[in-house]
Length: 568
Ligand code: ATP
Ligand code: MG
Image (cartoon, rainbow, N blue to C red):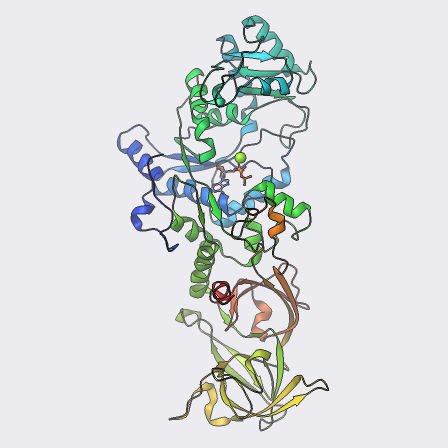
């Protein structure tokens, strides 16, 4: 690895446009210019053994992005070679997630299992050429004789079987004559190779497990390395882009292509996988979080799965923007979670409708406002987008404000409501606090105020100033709701780094559920993510019903976490 294009600068800022000109793009452009390829064809190859996460989104954006940039195409291909862990439900979820992310594979949906017959024929081709053999030793023995990084492996006594015998044994493996795991087909390459992947790697194993697509048609299944490159070749993939852990597999990828009569010669190029702070991004770890009940299913809004991000209210545009901005590097790096959050806020700030909601309601009675009267006031939907227009919000004698917008005995820098103090109610009037009602234990339960009718719309008469503007909801029209406040799932920036078990680093307060929150009436029809003014971005949860709305917090307005950390 000679390139060192970091994904962000030292301050964690987005890369420069030059950094976006990454090594993969350059390689693809060079192949197009030199005429090595006539069109660009990429693929995204998920294994249907789990749900997609934001790391996959990076790969999806890269593959589909390159295809779009070079006017080529991108295939979606399921790498379904291990039926033990794969399920139709995962296939369905992956299709939905890629589509949701905004990509279209057109007619190019494929499955490695579509090629099982061709792959088996190619296995026979290698056997016939003396380049593959059946080993009938146990898997343990095969592993134990592979050698180490410093010692060569030992050649199997089965390595020099005759072609005829190998053809016969492989045919019987395929026909189901042997028990599971009793035989493997191995490529005959080099047991002394410095690259462990070339030490007679296993091509086929015997496995009786129903496959989501081929059912019980097969009892032998190809290994990833024997399936992937050939699948690429069959589909005429020009650039097979994968993560760095496959770099050492590339010589094997090329060896199969060189030794088989494949219709094309795809080129494998690697890039660094996405790692995010305060997050785990591996299907194995995510599966454990779900299985052990640390989260509430695959689409728990705290998970970095695409289903979780969708349920959290993160728009696909923000994820694509994030993926494009972090760029593509050849060195592993950890991207700060704040950076994803910044992309989410930036997008939502532009597009999210503003609404008013009170999370911790404190009742306010306006003593000089006529009883039984309700006026409709104009409220701007999005100050960043004039085309979003405005809506009407009801205002009446009884309102709710945020409990922490009032202090009976305010410290110096607290400018919000306090006894005798005047503040602006957003889009409405100026209000002055004239009285405080308390319960037996001294908690404030209600405020009395007066309003100034000359400040309608929240406009100050000449020369009058207030230091705070509060959001509010009219009590009579308010919709009670449940609101779930999500925080980071982990307390540690590198979960598991301290003692190896990432579960020990879970944040015990990663969700806080508030009930009795009060929403303005327009929130009855909220479809996507909105901004609750002064509070953050929120979206209706699938659990939400008109009678019992539930909203999830997508993001706070500012990076409150960083501030908290500084204070701590
Ligand atoms: P995981 O390691 O999370 O279990 P995987 O690599 O086993 O994921 P696959 O379904 O094989 O999952 O991945 C499909 C594609 O997505 C592969 O090309 C893989 O390299 C890519 N990919 C997976 N995780 C990441 C990541 N964190 N960043 C970038 N690309 C990724
Ligand atoms: Mg994989």
